[in-house]
Image (cartoon, rainbow, N blue to C red; front, top):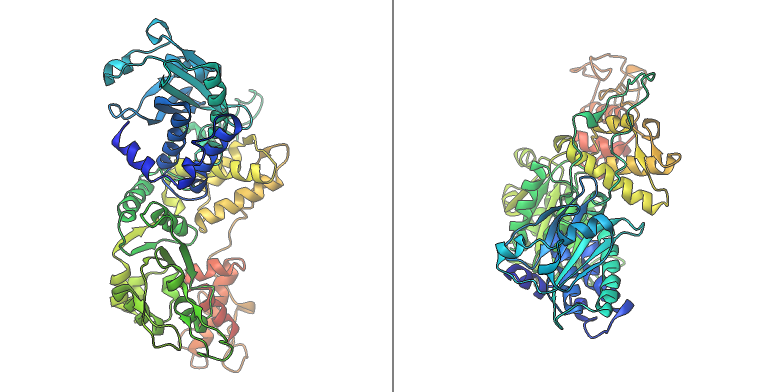
Length: 554
């Protein structure tokens, strides 16, 4: 077994060993699911999850080595993703090649008692590795629909040969492994039939007007890094590389990027791949709390600190002790609190609101924002010393429009699969016109907007097909808007009647206050965003709470 496999096995959750004493049958299958369960809903590296599954099965079958192949049904190939073969990094096979390739092609279990005498056995792997295969058991891993999505290969039974009882137990374990694979973000890549495949060529009499993105796009095969995070573009691979480096340390991380790019997912990936993975991941969203409550939320309060404080309450810095505190939208943190946060980052100590006792905390801090913090520093809205303190490890997430069509296709297929299963409405086809529309739309709301679009389309589609009319992507209005009747209210609330080039106002008009001009501009942006205040706040470069305050006061 490779050193990396041993290290990963040693960090598996304690639940992975709970089934070792169970003899066979469903109990063995349950133990595989238990071993994988802590990984399934988190952004852990998929390799760690798959290693846990294979290690559990190898132990249950008392085999010497195990290999998990993932099947790409569209290209009819399979690739080893977990192998107790330190001598080889990856093994790639075609359907029908070797024992594993034969299992993938035929979907049947194969037990080989004398590999040297079996024509299906590919001895080249043994020659490359110096390993001696004395017995082999290979079986298909299927999803809930019965489609082969992987192959599990076990080498050298502890008793010499794999028995019929071993085969029965292995089948149960493979069923559990299939359920695990189906629960990951990798699953959409493993199916033989993609809803994004090219449609059949139309009849000659049909006029083909709709663009065909697949003419110039080759549907990418299975690629993965972190569970629940989809995309393998160059920009995202650079992000993953930083996440791996940051995860092994306690350094403070600053994640920047437009709204909807997945900053919280990346923050969770840093946490669950770190030594603090078993401790709490605590989130504070600075945009959802009134300014007066943010301090109490972060630092807690003592009994009697203010009216209604009938008991002492810990803040997030205490709740996250030993784990990770994720401060989302740190750009909205009031200046009055930025100094207190700086102290915690520097000294790892603080006092509760209304208290005098100094509390020490052992935490890792990850911050995120869509704001331009350097510009805020220049404007005096964000402390320069705090900026450099939080920006120890910077991670900038690319907007969806900069990630390329391959990433977008992966995300589309991932969301089609997720919401098709969630709502009980399986989607068999996404038309070429719908694909083209999804690829050409700029998605200012990024992945969040794409996800909501696909969920809506899944619910509204007919007969398992998503067409362009099912996509809630109405043409966006001009980004600049006019106030009602092309005028701006003055301080007295009357219309100025002065027309300007953009907002129906005349800059330099002495009857207009700065507040009136600001409000007019904010209302115009909200109108241009079709009433979407979150999007308007993003375009204005302010938080949603700030936008709400400005709209609520003249």
